[in-house]
Length: 468
Image 1 (cartoon, rainbow, N blue to C red):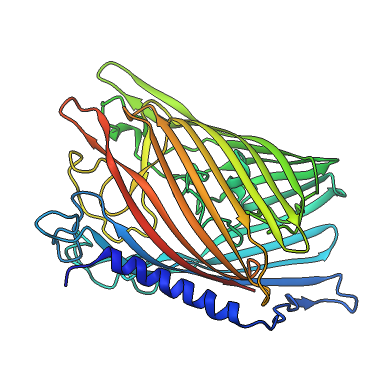
Image 2 (cartoon, rainbow, N blue to C red; image 1 turned 180 degrees about the vertical axis):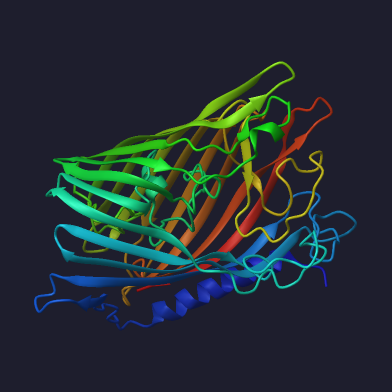
């Protein structure tokens, strides 16, 4: 049976709306409060171990890039009378975090879990060379791995703490240290983690960091040893396009935020995406990341190692409008400048089930939902949401929009893409449903070997989030 995207989208919207409608009819306000999962280590509770666990599930309908094929090698891109849509139910994140502070002078944190498990991705290797034509059990039993593991010591109370380990005290922007527990949209735009799964381990690197607050200034700086990942220098093609190369150089990073209204906690590195009106926040931030000689570009006459540099500047506003009604706004704007070497570009697709070879004349980014995500050039990003008045049962809705502009050196045409979504907030960020439709640009290589814009595709996501 040919997939009908319109019926699928309407089905998701009906399910989403029905849940909200049934809840709206329940006029009894339920108590969702709970005591955090905490193990007290003394009678007063000042010494403790705090546990956090969460799951994020996605139901997706994806309009595939040209040239995409399914697990049996059949077209799933609209050609040959095929459907260009595919659907899936997947686990975006499943995590467990433990943080212990048995003294004001030191802290230890461990964070582990899995990401991006679908029916075909996330587990054991396939039997053959092409996972889309010779599938095995590659979707099953993904391995848990460490996201964070660090220890921290207090040097000067409030002003200076120093830590070491596999850490998330990132530079560049607020979104580069974004918590995955409290996004306002369905997810991060991914380019906020400019080294994601290249020279980091899911946005983390080994390093030494320092952090603290000096009045209204919140700061974090780090000296990291990035993971070795990339092409050996001798194998880089002579095409004038920079690529990641193996090296042992250190990287430096920093982010500085000026808190003009309420202060935010910096016990942990995870920045909130929205407080849903719980705080009055107006922050301005700037940051950087620099990894010496991490890219290499070769031509027929030259060979040059180039630094990977990322700069960011952002504004974050999150404030209540009417506390009695529960209304609030949340706005964040970020500007990135990335220089990862001449013509550098990296294509990424989140929960992309169809990783097969596609001619660049059909899709420069590849198959499924991949798109040019990170590259040398500029990125502008804006997200804005408005929390509607709470209903009688205490739940609320928050519609939002996001907009992204990318201008990469490698691509002849810049791109603009947008997303629109709706949060149904059952109990703050602890329990919510999110429905979002997002667009992405399609690029192809033309006869002149230029990478040009060639249309737009879309994706619909219904997300379920619960964390304790």
